[in-house]
Amino acid sequence: MYGSAVKNDASMLLTGQHCK
Image (cartoon, rainbow, N blue to C red; front, side):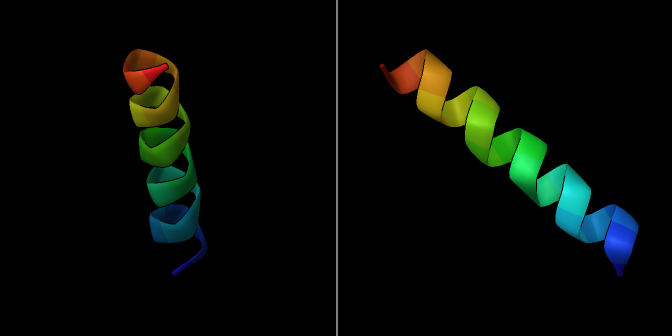
């Protein structure tokens, strides 16, 4: 579960940076 949450966070950060 923890690993999944971290992966999700990283994905969101990467997507946000790419979007911005």
